[in-house]
Length: 97
Length: 277
Image (tube, each protein chain N blue to C red):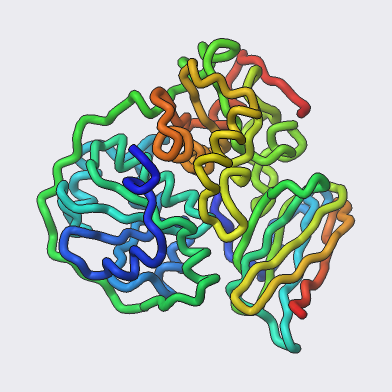
C-alpha cells in the first residue's frame, strides 16, 4: 500500500530499533491543525512523502537517519522546519505563524 | 490526446456538477477521506477492495469490472472524471485502469482532492446513489500494461523510468517514507532505469506542471523519445501518475505502466539489481 495509514495513534507494532520515525503535530494559534498536508523532503529538497494530519493535527513518517525538511500546506498557511533524525523516535512540531 | 481532453480544472468540475453524462469518481486508498466529505455527487472507488482481485495479485477481471461499474451507476458512454488524495496517485491509477478496460472518456481533476481542499472548496457528506447500469468492459488493453518478463527484457533497450523518491531508487528506503520500511526482498532499482520522481511532474498543490516543463524534465533525464517506455514505482500507482504525464499529456506513443513494480521486481530470483544514485 502506498497510501498513508491513519496518522497519530499508538506506536505499538513499530520496531523502533530499526525504524526511523519522524512524527509530531501541526499547530496554529494554540490549536492543532487537522487536515493539513505535511510533506517530507530529503537533504536535496526532493519530495519523499506526504501525509494529511489527523483530527489531532498529527503526522508520522518512516524515514532513514539523516537531515530532512518538513513542510506543511493548508488553507490557513504554511510552516517549515529542518529535522536531524536518528533510528528510533524523532518528535517535532510545526507551527503555522 | 492533449491536456484539454484529459485534464480538467476544479472550476470546470464545479461548473459541471450534476450534469447528465458526467460522473465524478473519488479514488482513495483511505476511504475514510471520502466518507468525511467528497465533491457533491461523486461516487467512491476503493483502489484496493474494488479494483484488486481478493485472492490473486491482479486486477479484477473483465466481468468483475463490468459488474463494479454497473453497480456504481456508470455507463460506457459517460465521461468519468476522477480525483483523489495523495496528489491524484490513485486517481491516476484508476485512470490507467479504466483505459486498460477500454473506457473512452476519462479525465482527471488537476490537483485532485488536495487542491480542492487547499482552495477551501465545498465537500459534501451526502450519500450518493446512482441507478445501476449495464456496463460492458472491453478486453484488457495490454499495450499499456507491462509484465515482469518484458521488464527484464527491457533492461538496456527500452526506456525504464523509476518514479520513486531518490532514496528508494538508491536502495536506502524500500517504501515511501509515510510507510514502515518493508516490502520487497531487496532494495535498489532495475539496471538502466532513470530516476525521475513522480513529484517532479507536479506542483506543490498537486497540479501537473506545464507541458513545456514536463517535456524538458524527461528530455533532461535522458528519456529517448524514439524508444518505448515502461514506468514503475513500488506498486504501480505513482507510476500511473507518470504514465499519465508521458502518454496522455505529452503524447508519447508506447508507454506502459508496470504495476508489479518494485514489490515484484525486488523479490524476483535471479534478476539484476542496481544500487546508488
